[in-house]
Amino acid sequence: LLMTFDGRSKLEVSGRDRNNVDAEECAEATMRMLKRCAQPDLLRELCKPLAGSADTAASKSWLLRSPRFLNPLLEEHADFFKFNVLGMPRDALFASRRTTQSKRPFLVWATAFLASRGAPLQPLDPNASRALFKEVAEEDLERLCVQKLLAEEKGLEGDAADRAATVRQLLRCGCAAAARMRVHFHAAVRVAFVHGTHVFVPATLPFDRALLVRLLGTVQRAVGSYSDKLTHLQQAIFEVVSAESEVSPALVRKVVQRAEGVAREASAFERVSAAQPVPKDKGVGSTRTRSANDDSDPIDVDAASSPEVAASVRARRDGGESSAAAAQTDAASGSSAGAATSSNGEGGGSRSG
Image 1: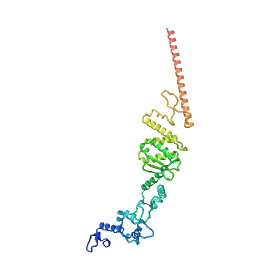
Image 2 (image 1 turned 135 degrees about the vertical axis):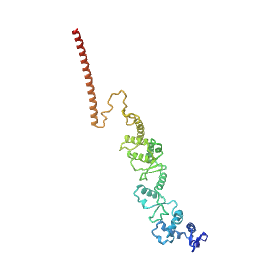
Image 3 (image 1 turned 60 degrees about the vertical axis):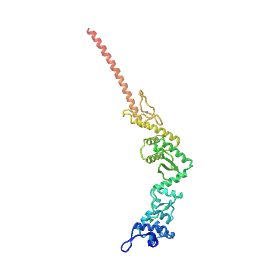
Image 4 (image 1 turned 90 degrees about the vertical axis):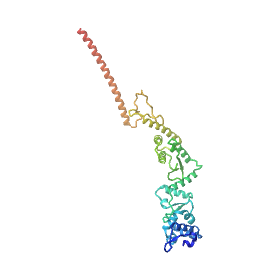
């Protein structure tokens, strides 16, 4: 058949019945014949079952009856069959129901978002040829979503831009890798995700302490290494920002200031012996530093965490004062007794004399 349509194929046949031919030469001759086909509509109709078309049964296409011979051709010349024969867009991405109806929220949102932005997302039929069509990878979906979102973000102003600037100020206090991360707040984003150095967050989420803590955790995982500075930032957030407060630039400046103090306290903790108290850094949330000659109680009774603690502190302090007074009384009594004994000794000596 090939030699009939392509006499220049120069197929070398062998065997007693001259029906044995090299497989690679046969494949090359088949592709030459298909690429020079003068009836593209007929060729497309014969290849429709490759896309899983429901209106054309695979058994009706004589061209596809030998998968063992055809699949290597599909894998090697996939672009020809998808774009030239079936007429699909060259930048098409194929997503089956496994992606569009996935249990993973990001995949569902990404496919719907790209489809609404006119991306060449093609439905993938379950019966489509696996040798020709590949399911779109999650990385490709992320890449396309980032391209669309960054293009829409140019010239963006308002609350989303202010939030991004505030978070950028916070991350600059972290490690160098965290400072390179870019956090974007976008109204079209429904599921937070990370791609490279970009973190996309739904703009509809409340800008509070919980969001800052989650962002730090996301950045920490994206960086891929542990950083003390991010830990200090997290501690400062819990100390400075209340759960109900809305994050503002002024509040972030206090967090950064407190994080620097936490870093100094952590450094001092590693150098101070166990017998000495860890010095509290002077800054946001710090207390008065006691001098070496300060004999006052280091615990402020009025600022105690509970009435039981305050009562215990007062009892310990009163007990200490009572013990000191008793010791002074005993010392005075001992001195008087010693003086009386000395006087009696002198008197006895004179009488004896």
